[in-house]
Length: 337
Image (cartoon, rainbow, N blue to C red; front, top):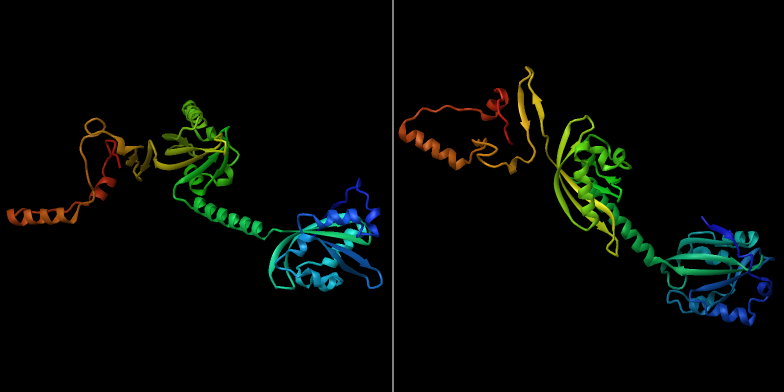
């Protein structure tokens, strides 16, 4: 689609309307930094004819524009993916500047390039066409979009939760995993502050973390969040400030990984506890936070030793399903798993 805008009302075009070879105009036109072409209407044939081109157009390695002077837009637009004749008509008729990006095949070499085309009407019968080769720019933009799409897929499907917040702690991105941890959809998290997912008792801790992030510090904390259903969710959060080129904090990215539910209890049908999960069990200290240790998985070498000892000493054996014993017996103590 051709984008149109009014031509500059302050520019006088009458002196060039019938004389595009006027010396002042010609000097300016020839020295334009980008390729430019002049089209004149042939009223008898109802066609637009190429009558001139500037130095930049003549220097194009993809083109041999000199042999194309005198040919019509209808003839030359076979190399384009748009209606060049129609665009010229529209710009001249309405006195508007038209812009579009299009793929163009140069007739002389068959090379296809992406051009940003600008049509500037000098009168109802003369239009100047400016072109800029944007092939590399478009290729770079497409590569960037592809890279962003790939990165977004990786982030969206990551096993750990990923959240991005602005300087006011408002969430501007949350992946699926982060939302699920809290019982929401990603879209429901965006636009809300992180404080809305915390108990008021940890707001001061969160503000201190935010202040350190703004000062460039990286943070890793276990922090208690609130699930949509109301129960507490403990997460291990690693937060990193996102800086602009000047080193100024503009955003903060946070990876969160669920490390358990404090006081999150599962009950059997008779109301007895199955288990109680406690956050950060791996940080508990022996003989301070717990006494005995039970390992529910034995190495095969250990089993062979026991079997050998039983055979040597003639001992009797009994098998115990530790998993079922744990789940079905009464739970009287906190068990760290």
